[in-house]
Amino acid sequence: MTRTTESSQSVSNDEVRSFWDGNPVAAEGIAAEPGTPEFYARFDAIREDDDCEAYDYSDMIHGYSTSAGKRVLDVGCGNGYVLSRYAMHGAEVEGVDITPKAIELSRRRFELAGLEGSFQTTDGEKLPFPDNHFDIACSMGVLHHIEDPSPMVAEMYRVLKPGGKLIAMLYYRYSWKTIVIIRLKRLVHPKYRGKTQQQALNMNDGDDCPLALVYSKAEAKDLFSAFERHRFRLNQLSWKQLLLIPPLARLLKPVLPRSSDNFFARRLGWNLYIEAYKPLDTTSG
Image (cartoon, rainbow, N blue to C red; front, side, top):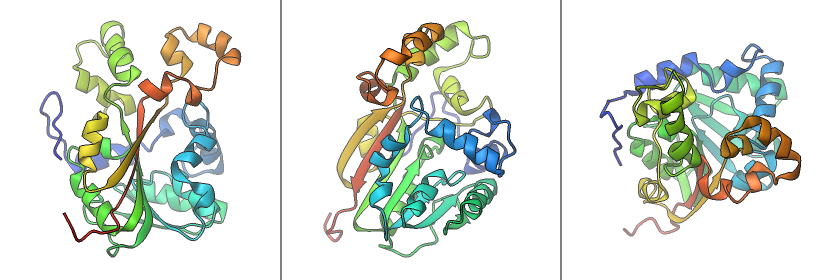
């Protein structure tokens, strides 16, 4: 499935690699040096904050606590957070990423935590694993940065065992952030004025991020059409984003439900989670 940006700009994997190698996920907002214990501690605290993705919600999505003995692949492993949670519960984990920096950070995280895991640099279009090898293949917040992720999805399908689970996260086309916040920024924020909607979306992950696509549920199902039993969930819409008045959100937060549990996040969240399965019978169709 090939997606084109609003401006019909072509974005190469080399551009994507260059940006993320120089801008590891969340590193800009963390004072500690990437690869230090302080960096991982701060990253994990931000990652597990309820305004992002509380740990119990992440466990519900991934099934860390029931993964003992399973083979798990993460395509676009970042600094190894997700795989470390699987490994802590006894899973056998493999991570791949397009950037050498991510592989370095993942290996360092595992070394510091005394965990076992294997990591390799690849763009994901040709995974270095045999057919029908993994019980779980995940890719969280990665595929929407690739202009055409279909070769990566095909490889994830290939290396999953029949009946194996796919877990992915994409940015949601009809999120509050897409339809309200990004458009407001284009009207009132000097940095965003004059930008197209696509250019403003790209800037979500850094001013120079080359690409950030958004998907509807139908588009996501089309991307993962080789799989079956698709299930979708939405999350990540903080009260600060929803109310648009940070002081009011801080005042009301003690009496409001958790961000990950509220009615609005489940319908207008930025993160679209997809769960699907490789068919047991892969000889037909």
